[in-house]
Length: 257
Image (cartoon, rainbow, N blue to C red; front, side):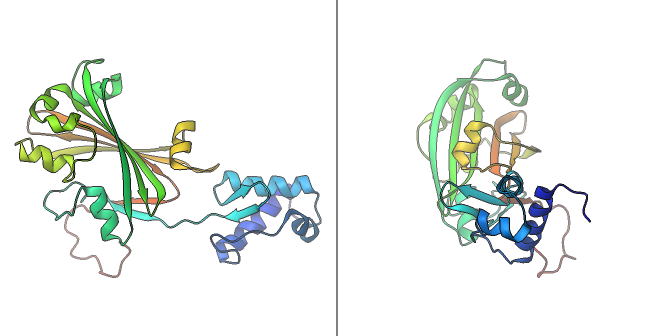
């Protein structure tokens, strides 16, 4: 006989059925009353088991509608090609990658002058509190919130490339725009971390309980100094990043992309 609490036994049984496809993404789980009969358990026990699945990001709950298996149509981002000017683009890197995947991109923008925080100032090699331009994007894939992206540019750079401070999209992407002014990004340093979302991140990305965010910080460098710091915040359940490093001639074409 299992030594686990009954609510965990309920959660484990339902998790196995979700993993096996008995309950597919988008499917509703049986009602609490049906589960009470099946597991010979109290309503509180069933709710505790279901809530455990909610906190693990496997199901969502809606008042009056019961519990539903979360849909996870993952978007795969090739981070080593992202913003690489040697690859053809149909717009900025985000729009290109999403469109090439057969998905539909959409994004909104906010542009503002803001003092550099200590962490941004450290990456941009400017004084804390000095003026930067923040370009903030709220991005969607097929109308589902996908990520937010905040990019800070140092004040000296904005003087040379004034469109950075103008509201709205830069159609060709900021990396190509800067390169047209002779300010070419020749390298970048990436930092990747995961944590639970802040309330504001959960609101913007419509993240349910138990779903973490993936933080991707990229500092871009021209020949002699950094030119931008970008923090992209992804929904952890809908995104996957991959990198291509070195000679991949031995990689089979039918391997996962």
